[in-house]
Image (cartoon, rainbow, N blue to C red; front, side, top):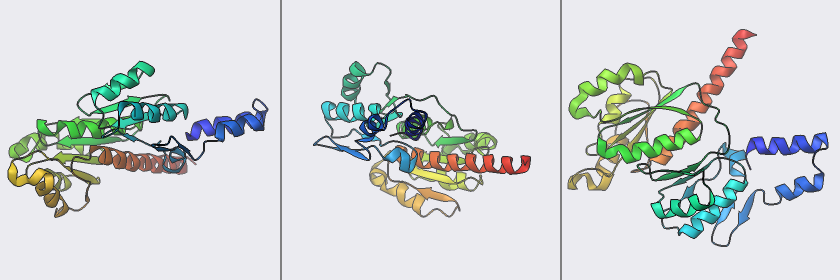
Length: 262
């Protein structure tokens, strides 16, 4: 259940608009609900600030739809990753407002008005071949109400392209850097910005890249301070972590502004 929806429910009980029994009916599936093949975590939005996310890979269209339905009923925004067109075709028949992000392989359904962050997340990708992973990060961050700016095809082979965008990238609270091949880009970006850098190795590259292991090891061995690394092709993980960092930065700014105004 989304935090705002729970607050609305409690306010309704307090004001007499809803009975205690009616509220209990609404809360009967908190914190989780079993579907037999899956156990939907309805409590995650309260614990972590965003509802459970559906990982569609190896799930049937029917399984994905049933989980999607339960998350929609909970009232929050819904995100499904690694989704194929067949998943979306099934979901869109039930939920017309659902959106398929082809490059990112994600399905989103926004049910709540966005509360856009004041700070931004920069998403930097080395080459066009890395775009799918970068887009997964962007879609994830944006369904979590985070502002993003994308900088595509600025890899180290033409480093002047990156340096030309460096002033803009430095404005972000957190930077996601997506790269395959040898994976050098996060170290370079880490040496240019004061923000935390989340490095995402991709499986893009010739044989010696070993399906992303080579850039993963390069990023793990980065000599640039402030670089953290997620798993190979894990744009979702990078987007989620960046959203969490950006939320905390916004919260700190709000507290600081409140203190100074007081």
